[in-house]
Image 1 (cartoon, rainbow, N blue to C red):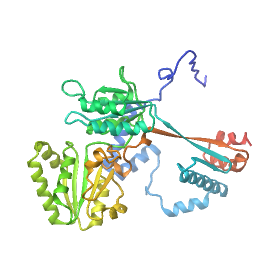
Image 2: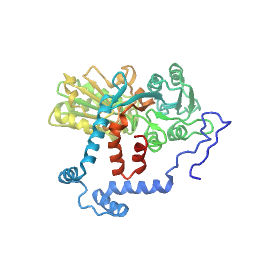
Image 3: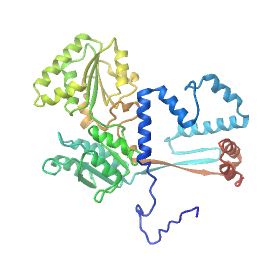
Length: 426
């Protein structure tokens, strides 16, 4: 029998246990893939070439395809295929260029596309614990989920030595209207929310920062669940300082990030040697006076930097490479540097705009990408809890106008049934 029967008569939603689950890649596949990744990281092009020969049976002399070869291919394909590709690209481009603009529908060539916005059913929030408590993170995770109208919002927090969660965190959860709270932390909390246990039902999206183990667990379950804000791990800051920057303010903001705990980064980037020395001295003074001196010294020892550059352009270039969670432009006319920002979780403009403001009450989220994932990821927002579904309706004459291009592309890809589905409707 080609079609496996599924009889759900007498069953009731949500049918989680009644429907087949996606096939897991399994340990064998996971092991092969991890080996390939490790080999490419270690050997670069040599590994890529050898693996291509092994798996694809092809010896490629030059990995990069030349511009001449690309241009030649565009000239060699049949005109009908070239026209179909151009038509498809133009329509795809036009749809995405209009995506999200009022009134929300896109119509072209007799085809109407409606944009449907739906929240996920269950969102899992993680707030760190242990060394400190973070009720603010509870608010940051829950508020955008509520804006997105997620029906069930779940919170996991590491318990204290007593086995309970502290009152400040629970109060924040109450204010935010969290539906379920679990006293569990670490990678085990991420696994429980991703796969479900006897007590904790699985979720659709997991958000919230954590230590390296939490961040790695989120990376490993990504694809089983949605993981927002990329690698939201240990805290980071880059402070860009000029000769005019108040040294004590630059220093305290470096200490602020180090205060979050181990494995974070605190960068000072400046083109003034005098300012670098002045800020470094202030950091030494503040750390020596801190009740958490040992922890701060350990964090700065592993991730504290004072970077000297030739000028402001180079300073911004360094910041873009680091792609920090927090970028403080602690200079006069800081907003003039915003066009130079290419990668950062959040930017704070001027000496009077500390990152700690964003940690609590500025409004934007403090769950931000770290570990250079700001190159491709953004702050947590309501859209991380939503799914975008497009509904396509072909009006009269649409298939007559667009069908030939569909058939040409389908036949080029060897997908005869795709082409036939158009012919049967013509």
